[in-house]
Length: 186
Image 1 (cartoon, one colour):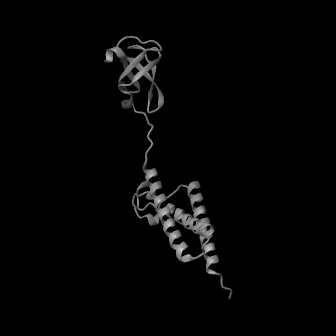
Image 2 (spheres, one colour):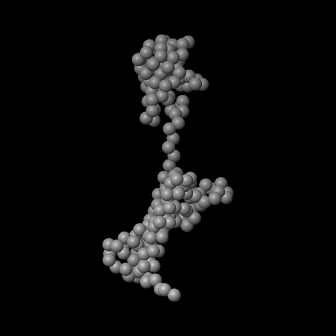
Image 3 (cartoon, helix red, strand yellow):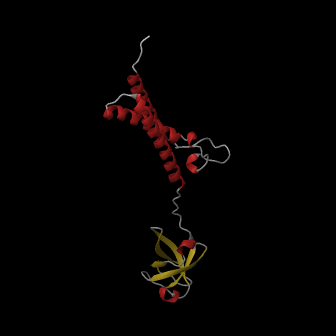
């Protein structure tokens, strides 16, 4: 039976771990992502479900890739093939990378980007009349809210407003905004 030198075996171990971690990371990017099966309403670690990092796909993916990459780089740049030094360092860095990546992805998954503009968000904002409006005549106003230009139907609380006039949004009645002049609002 042929015996493989320990340094060659460790090089192959590092390489296989790097490739396995890279494949898992690639599949996570291409697929639905991280998580464990939904057993009792928890949607996985990415949504703050099961807190055990050991059940996280991202932990194992980044740990394997980090362990393999670190081990290969230590052998390449350090010039040492002594596994007494390389193996513990590669293990610690791999586990640390997996833990950090798992919690970073968990934190990012919890962030909620909400760009929905509700009628209550518009009240008190200054708007520009884009289609003339009056008390009995619906027109349109435009305003900026949450970084977006919003155009809504509007009616006047008092008087007639021509295109280009500045108004303030007082309230919402259904899908129609009630506006008044800037002078009257102050």
